[in-house]
Image 1: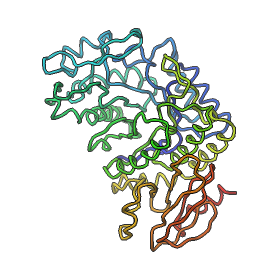
Image 2: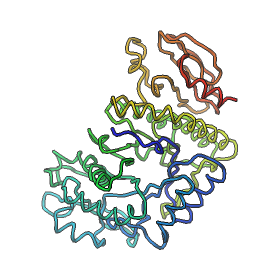
Image 3: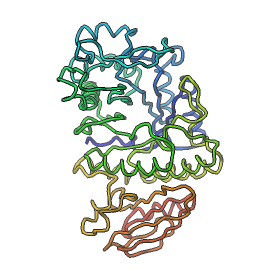
Image 4: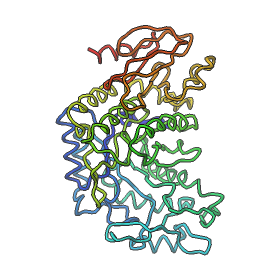
Length: 441
């Protein structure tokens, strides 16, 4: 993977969805007013005129240049969602079709899925550009360059990049590179490749793309992968940890997840607030730290309820704020791990057996992990939990990051975990001990 840009190691704010420039800026300004660290804020889908136009709807986003400049003055970058779908109503469709830039089916017609779009709220068939065609990759980049890059937006959320085609039926698809059964899964790799090459051609070096899907080698093109539109449940939270470990071991070190889950979750519900805290704690010690979701109650214009850190009540807010500030203090350490990933391919988030191959117990543990060589993370993955068992790998002296109490490795502990605490252990020789001592003060 390339070296992760420093700004990407901070906090990312997102929701489905900020419907206007005014709303987006008001959220960024509120983070600034509260003196909360914010690196990235996200513009989700349907900010566009039509799918395949790859440009803002000026009714709701009247001054992208001014918006970007205002965010920059607050120390915030903006990321915009870019889909690979093309409406037949888009003025780009006819040119793309005539040049062979659209995925086809085996009978030669355009592959499609019935969806909704602006100016087609009752539904319309959307089509898919073909990233296995070099000309198509260049075409979409040029449109994105005109619609977003020229306004100063340089971070792209490559959503629905499997592509989202239901049902997909790869045996029915024909790409520039070949039959769907043979090549369909390479779609996200070539998709992110086109954007990466476009950014490099513009002289950009700090390149990150948030991708819902990837293929072997996607990391070479700046792909940060998230786990998709998952449900807001504790069982799903548990699955995220395993997904992140597997992603890292597959060669993709930049990984993230929708803190709180994507589907559901009412910020006023005490049960969801508990889940949000536990998920946020896990997020603070994930490679990328990103809050996103479609909160309840939601409306039919794809507008969910509030999803900012102050949206879950005062008690929850105070806990989340402390983890945001702790993440800021840990960013130099996080970036050291990203440098290791860049130079050696070792993911920052990894199973215990990577660092402790001689400890047989580490090979069967999948609910705790190492974040870099010094920090052992044991997220709370069950509702109403006040403690959890943690294994400390052998032949190492460990310290509880919160209490400073020292333990010898090779043993299981029953560790207290009240709602404000995620169990964390440091190697006794780690310089991170000072970070936690200052945080505890």
